[in-house]
Image (cartoon, rainbow, N blue to C red; front, side, top):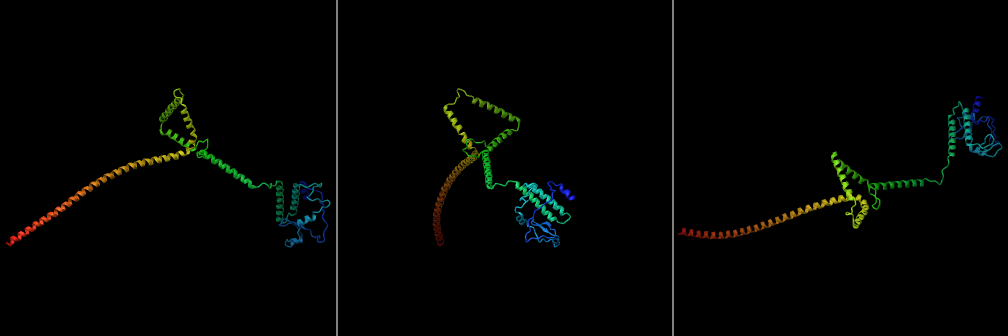
Length: 346
């Protein structure tokens, strides 16, 4: 009684007696005297076991196959409708089926209390959870087959490439290295930084407030002079030729602005050329001095050569004179020897 009162509190519980219609028994089926026990095997299929089979090491020799049962009981019978029905023969909804399965699960739990059949209960709970998951999945609309991931990936790649191209173009314009044919050149960041650095160095060069005040006064004076020069006067009006020249110069400002990034490299080249020209001039002067020194050395060598020739000539003449003197002396010695012999013989 306590069990019936507890089940009566469940929502949608039918207190009417259950009436089931079973088909006629075939020749190959027979009733067993023992009361079968409904259990759930590992594959999620229900099988009935009797008390004698439980004693035989829990081996089930007879199994209830759900597919065969569906085929067997799937025929149209009186008082039975496929797909489940409510109390008044109306179509059973998914929520009603889940509620009915939960009620049956509660009944099974009450029947197996005090028994060691935790594996069957876990399998039953798992089946119920799978049913709930399938019910939630059936509510989610299936994706359309014509939608593929490849076009989405291509669109994402194209958008990233476009964004990257825009960022590179903006960076080139900021750095002043964009195309030279751009009619509206952007203010380059590097030249702006260099100008700011020069201004900051000019402001901090004096190191005192007096130099800054003097520079400010000078700037004010230069501005006043510029305003005076810019003020038009009848005597200082520009001629048509000067105006044309100014317009031509103003038209050249655009290309010159585009060439601004190449000016530092060009200035470095010009400085290198100036250094080379100065070095070449110094080398030319040194070469001229070396040539002059070489000419002087050649003149000295020529003078030394002439002196040597004179010395050689004098030495040759002295040798000839010595030879003649030697011959004269030899003749004198011969005469003296003859005279000495004559005196000794006398």
